[in-house]
Length: 272
Ligand SMILES: NC(=O)c1ccc[n+]([C@@H]2O[C@H](COP(=O)([O-])OP(=O)(O)OC[C@H]3O[C@@H](n4cnc5c(N)ncnc54)[C@H](O)[C@@H]3O)[C@@H](O)[C@H]2O)c1
Image (cartoon, rainbow, N blue to C red; front, side, top):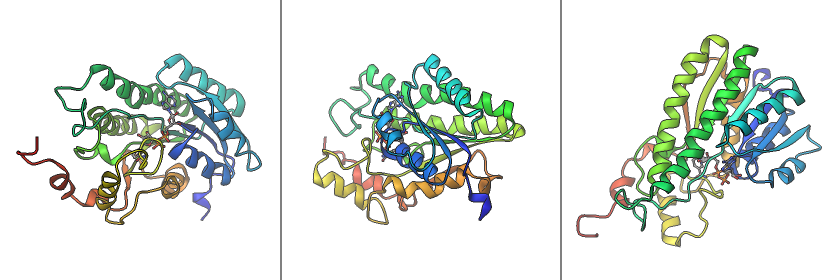
């Protein structure tokens, strides 16, 4: 299907050194796009180097919480490639205890933890969206895809307050920007993954019982992988989704179709 093709398109991916962003960048490069990978981690250089041979892949070290650095990033993309067709705004963090863990309950949570996550997941997204939207508005075309989360679609006691709140807020930002930018031919959508094996989401050092409980909360009975998201990511980038804007598209093995998970996860009144 020709409308699914993105070869020759100029794509920017933030948070591209690892995990979901890295896999989306790799998939875009494999489809023949010119890919710009941005990340706060300088391993982004190795990530981009691993993609050469497919097409141009350019690395940029950029902290999305720094508006000036984001301005330079987008200027550098335009200087190198002349335009920006697709922006995957994907950089994100968590690393804060959930309400079920010490230091994560609402009356315990340090404000610094709250701010650190919102700085990246919401303010960082704002800086990137602002710059990318400006370029795409002037160009009268473009697709912006934001990595949200199923944790932003419902309360999730196994995930920290600032993460859940940042990902819920992201959806409002996506809808509001989609509304404003529609008349300029710029689309803005959210991709909302369920639990995916990465630095943020993976089984990692969690106890085996917690890993299994996450698996049980996914009707397809497995964690997702970054590769599970690339089909949807490519669709949202391409002309095949040309009439889709302001939407939130879930890839979660059926997890949000299941509501019983909350009562199974929360401790009862006598359990502290
Ligand atoms: N893994 C999951 O279960 C899951 C589920 C839903 C949504 N998400 C979202 O997917 C996105 C990607 O996360 P991931 O799971 O691939 O985790 P990850 O930790 O593997 O990748 C996140 C990347 O973002 C980069 N990053 C962090 N702070 C940054 C900053 N200030 N500036 C630039 N880059 C920064 C990191 O260096 C890292 O390379 C995030 O927005 C995350 O919230 C993840």
